[in-house]
Image 1 (tube, rainbow, N blue to C red):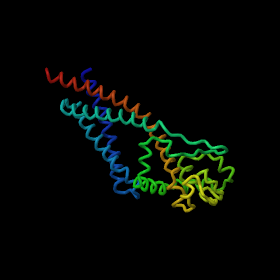
Image 2: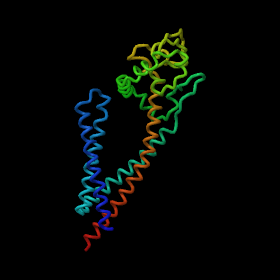
Image 3: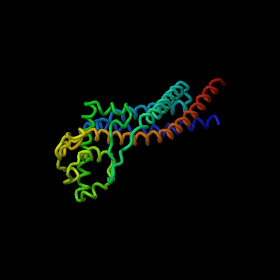
Image 4: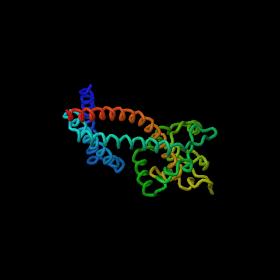
Length: 264
């Protein structure tokens, strides 16, 4: 039993070490070869994650297999911090995603979204001009609206209104339902005479690089995507936390075994 916990911890950390290599390589590759700022945004977090996993797994592997108690103690300390951070993130993710839902429209297959329906923390992220300029450039580069335009190019106006659009398509690629613009194509609408009750109507432009990327509805569509993604991540993170706690328990057993062996 004494040897079992050390061997099991060594095996687990060996596979974690192998996993850290492609993660670190992917981060380095993104930093050197990313074509846009959107792709480059991910390189540093991925590199940090890869380095963290590599050093923690080495500490756990050497500490368990070579019975080096100080390394195993550092490994357990790092694992404890990881569990604590994961627990805090899960609570935070559920807290900031508990608000927000699309508005169901009569005779429409899609919903429309309002920034004010989401948590204050999320609202502040998209209200920052510098943040939104970066996000907008990523949305334009991702071709979310050009793909949307191609997909619905041949449908009639009735078919378009019944389409099940996602949050970004609804918020960024078409004008708000409040505008009552005349439909010509998915991203081509004829403006009606104002004034408009919704400021987004003034922002809309048929130009592919403009559309409704600066609309509040586009920001709300992004927040809806973030809300859904974070909820899924938080749910998966619960399973990950359970796994980490099990590994941490095995590490505690191995550490205790090392201490016992040193007493003999």
